[in-house]
Length: 238
Image (cartoon, rainbow, N blue to C red; front, top):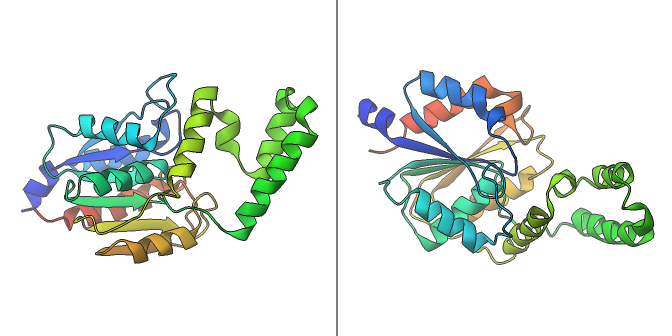
């Protein structure tokens, strides 16, 4: 049983990043333990593209990537989790197990976010003449906590908007897949309340919270994350 699990294909769908290098330590540990890990390159991010993507485009992309796979284990972080959840809504029971790390997918309707959006729009108008100056634009975006938007090329700025808008339509339902949520208590990108809400919505899911983790434990706590993933993967059904 253990050998079959070790030989099961495991795919990582990264979040909103332009490099998979930050995953190197975690992936190396898992591979050294005998796990067959494949890091997928997400179009527009680690796979170059000028296209503006919708969530439907990403579901089609993932379908193509997994077309020859039977019951893979999926590890998905942040935006990668959003893609995986939308995928399972269309193709239930497609994975043997889903491990979500600080997953996106829950629409952020919190008052704090609404205020931030209003402030962002106001500053956009007020500082429009200054927005052409990179350093000024960067400072404003950093204050508002929209780093991803600042660093994205034009096509991906539109893609990011499409991803956030898609959360309004995502109805997380039973997907036939045992799901484990790994969440950092210090996560400010996808706050813990999102993880708790997601846990309630996904049948047969469980959530594990880590006091010292933020949004990217593969960078800050690679060994601890690798140990958690090892235990979860070994628990996977044949």
